[in-house]
Length: 397
Image (tube, rainbow, N blue to C red):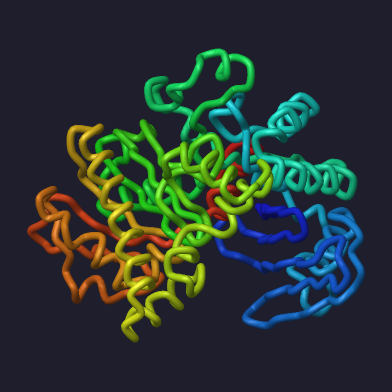
């Protein structure tokens, strides 16, 4: 059974075709500059890369070309679209309505549209991808997997903000959390690696990259997560500020004569480790500069590590302890130095890093010492596979 997984952005889309009998990726690709001059599709299969440069005015045209690549007589993966049993779509925001993935129908699409004001940059593109596939593959079921769904088990005291309650009632202002598909996948996989059930463990997942979020998963259910109404809250990130004193916002708006959109752009696109380091939003560049003695680069890395540690400490307190700490995503999976820095002050929790075991990038590995009471582990995230698994679960009886 083949599942096509699609992740649509505003001007790009990623895809994978996965054979669910063995969970092998048959082919994958990336479309860039949709609706912009210079559209390009990069298709990968069997270690080879094929590039298509053609105008793509919208997501429907882009997906037409993707399907052509899947069927290509020389470098395609299938002979007929009938070989695709279902299509799984990533959708960023499902609001309070969805606590699980769901098969697409008119009501589901309507609810996703209702969440556009909560994710104005993402949900419209997600909807365009779904509607394009509905037109191009009329008889194939579609499933949506929400970034927010896994976090919907949070108790009210953790998702409500201490703001006038009417804002929650009128505008659904609350903590939603993001990267849920990743947190779900890596927490489940970490439990499998340890030979245990997720429902028997207290797990803290650290999805650390250009966008970073953390989650407290208490016996299989998320009780808290670091991102909020939007992906701006939490630890400082590549270009996002993370947690700040809210009074800074009107103060800077007044001093710099900024409007609401300009202050939002500053917080989302010009802050984080980019702002502190003055170097880059890429942690690899910052680490290289810090090694050369750049003090601001060092401060940026230290602040990031400290913010992650603060959340680990807070979540361990909320759960009455922790059994497993999971590192994933670009920085979590690949930065040996950052993991070591984060772990350096967590010995009081009962975990200590093993420098030799930690000398690993992009692989599954237990990185804590054998005598650690709390296991630290790296698990590469695989959101596409999680989407495919949910799509299979919901479309087979």
